Image (cartoon, rainbow, N blue to C red; front, side):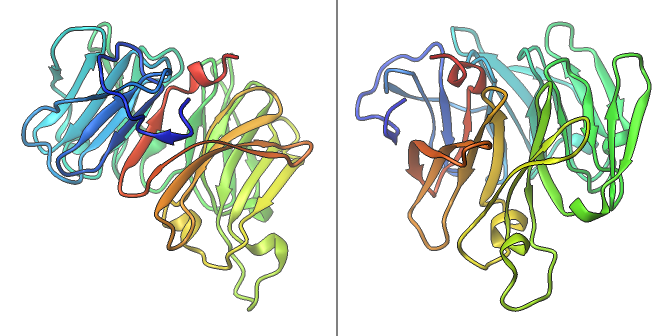
Length: 287
């Protein structure tokens, strides 16, 4: 991936590693070779639209005032799918599920899972209200239905509930087969906060919830987690978390890898903070 997005070259992109959207006039996809291509969105989505690149880099989905749409990057037009009014409009959360064949739309009401191959839809009442959640590689959900509780769906159809009061304030979960990670908000009122009470990222063993790693931000501001400036994006392997961060008062945001065992950080790319960005996380797992 280019050190800075978008690259200087323009051309045709059929499989993208990144999508940038300024919420106003400009949306573009960027290929692995750094080539950038402008992407025309369906009309009337609004400035608080949500546009997301699929994990395999082959599809784009968008939702806004005029509804929900998706398309293949390798040719084809935008396809409109009729979805409930509760998951259309501005500020809707759009999350691709593993495999890039389905996704979830949600607001503060129950989420809706959409199968893009069949247009089949299923309501997800477990995602009602303020819920941090993620799907594991098998598509099973882990979520926090209430303060201090973590629920994980099991392959046999049952669910496992664990009290995690000491780990409350988790947001934007990512789940692998063995671990989970999240942005953890500072829940302390102490001033200055202790090191482990700062906003940061936390990585946990999925079965025992033992802490595998903790990465606090240097700034004492709580805007990183609650403001969305710090987000875990994906597990690249058993030890490596991909995350994004937009430092306070900085012009650029950064995509970074974090080795939760060694603590090593490596910058992958950067982009103007005026854009929201999504990434083909499955492609970034490849060498």
